[in-house]
Image 1: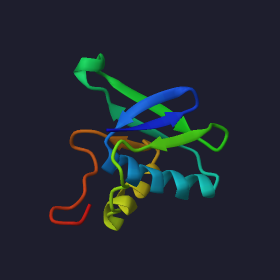
Image 2: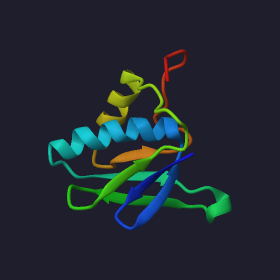
Image 3: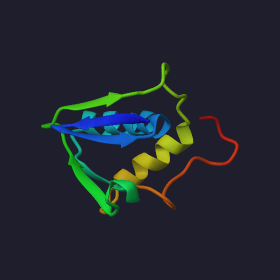
Length: 105
């Protein structure tokens, strides 16, 4: 389980998802495009949802728990980027955008 550091906050995110999220962050912020990221909070952490507005004015750091970064599934990264372009923003969680069956990590 990795950690997304955004401003003064830390959000636990699976290493595989975090690697793909980093691709989206890089692409969107390089274009100076802000967007929302929303995810489901585990019941053990109080439940509900968290949303953050991501823009160039806030420091971001991705910390991976594993020793190596997961491989990027291009199709999944593209789907996440397209979702980030919508008015709802990028929604992560059960039933949200997942990689295709049989596709590489």
